Image (cartoon, rainbow, N blue to C red; front, side, top):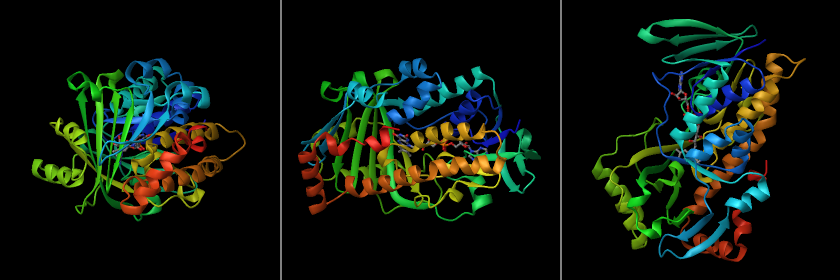
Length: 397
Ligand SMILES: Cc1cc2nc3c(=O)[nH]c(=O)nc-3n(C[C@H](O)[C@H](O)[C@H](O)COP(=O)(O)OP(=O)(O)OC[C@H]3O[C@@H](n4cnc5c(N)ncnc54)[C@H](O)[C@@H]3O)c2cc1C
């Protein structure tokens, strides 16, 4: 049977390995890091992602480390006034067949990794960094840096680039253009919930909207921690995506003070409780235009390698999980060539992902709006209530 070579063992790569295994397909996975690990903080998983994770048998493990928020509570960052609520928990379960879950990225990654190991269908190779690759009609040739810094040739029937926003697979096959430094930054941290005053211990997702800023918080770690993210716009920008861009304590304080100017003291007090922030410079790409943006010949892309997006719809990992599910389904089709199966996957996915990418960009304008636009946004939320915040087209799939 044809075997896929997966490049990258993040949430997308592990989800793909697991989904392929569920369909009876073995795979090889190359990960550049010495150990599997996830940094970062919390993420939200919509019912669209959670339904797939549950179908792969991960429900019980996720329940232990995840958290089911009662509702989304949107507030005006200037004065703390409520702008609207979207009931989640049971409401989502009834409507979409799964609730919305918040979870630490490291916990989600560990649940996926344990499941891949228990399933035994993927062979994982740590400390294997793909340096170059070339594909032709017969297969794909790769050069891989292996432990001890030796470079070795690898051959594969087909390659799936799951290597994230700075994807080497993408650069080698599609070229290096198009990644956009947005000048938006995410400052993230987690705080033990038992240290917080009662007002911050609600079981909600909090979303605070202000000029060129929004703040998101929700419980993770089974409810032990509050995940806090400040998303702001800054003149500073970096060329390379990645965690922990060096932001000195002075730069961090200056960025946060500038962004939070004019916000209410309740929000400022919460931000002041954080001792250590990690900064993430946000990159995205224009929405996909056609299936050939996701698959060419014997090479396909999945997750951030294919469609990095602003996290303003909280769906980057969700889309990677959906990609994985779709890829595994198409990969086991009989009577089709390798190229046809990868193309069928791309055809099934590109429009949906493009819509999510575009909506994430639109949310950037909406969330960070000023003046009349902000006023209209607030009025719309007030008049439309939960109807304008719910997204059946997104969560219902
Ligand atoms: C601030 C912020 C908040 C977010 N919030 C949410 C949210 O609420 N909900 C949501 O669904 N998503 C969210 N996301 C997005 C989500 O985190 C990403 O979309 C998701 O983690 C992408 O997973 P991935 O596996 O595609 O890429 P990555 O997680 O980047 O994994 C790529 C892997 O490939 C490896 N690799 C890279 N290059 C090579 C190479 N040459 N050879 C071998 N291995 C290689 C890397 O080491 C890494 O392990 C958020 C993102 C940010 C920045």
